Image 1 (cartoon, rainbow, N blue to C red):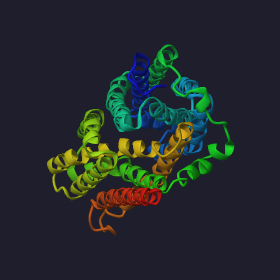
Image 2: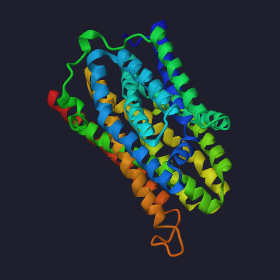
Image 3: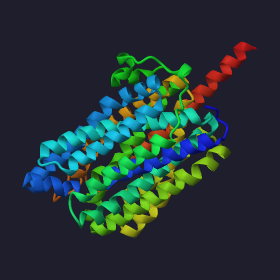
Image 4: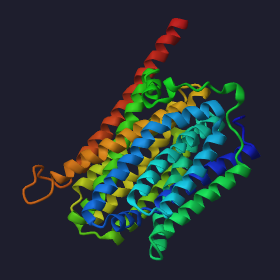
Length: 417
């Protein structure tokens, strides 16, 4: 598809953004009620904690296994059929959980959800197909803004519907996914031309084979590590934020929910509005390093903040962290061919899944060692300080990788002359 603006291209971008919004809304809408439903079916809070942990691991594990497969399938058959089938599968997943009579049904639903949510790989590949390299960071920023919008609206809607019934949010999530499917069925054009498709190969489609792609180019390897560090640090919030906010500042569910909504709104602003102009002025790499740097400063300040108001103030520089993800994606897509975009996104999603498995375990352990009567770590904000160091390391690595590539380009130019 031509990178020039056109009616079909605008319609395709609109569909990708709407689908991303509806998909994330459909996942976020069940967040307020899924733990309660698990507790109801398990019969005890202790058992519910175990099952919830199992569901998170199952979802992340299926993402790790299936993301490269789905990405490679989109390289072979095109983005449109893979996205539509995945969205329809997500609707069936929520229908399954809406009628689940026991925990095993929910476990199957979480596994199916991990598979169908892997369609995000095709979504990112689609954006790479229809966007010229210099505009990809802005395109990925718009997808990130749609994700953030879904994470804001989904839990809020789920909380309202949860007051009616624990099952109501699941029915609503199924309806949203079904709406996305029918919208795409009539609106979404194919983005990958037949002559640019790649034969499907299990050697490339398995997660370890897909990760080999990330070693095919020196800077791609460095950017993959930066991507992992970004995901790793980000899971700090899913692992310990609620506990930390309650233990240190005495915040309850209302304050935490409001704060998460504010985080989502700021992220929407940064990725949806700010990324494009900043990249146009500074370039992808500098914007990425700035985003990681501000993220490190913000998380460091959060860990040191003695009061809740100072913690909230630290969220504002931390919001600029949203500059990093779209620019990392943009830089990586420019280093593989058009027929490998799906495989690349599958590999990236697998990297994120690995971080999603190990990071909560790590930060959860760090936090547990920093609280209690006699903590082994003397400071309750230790997990935040470690996450800040991880992001700072990512910024340094991303900057150094760019310098190495610039030097290599100069050497090649000198040899050519």
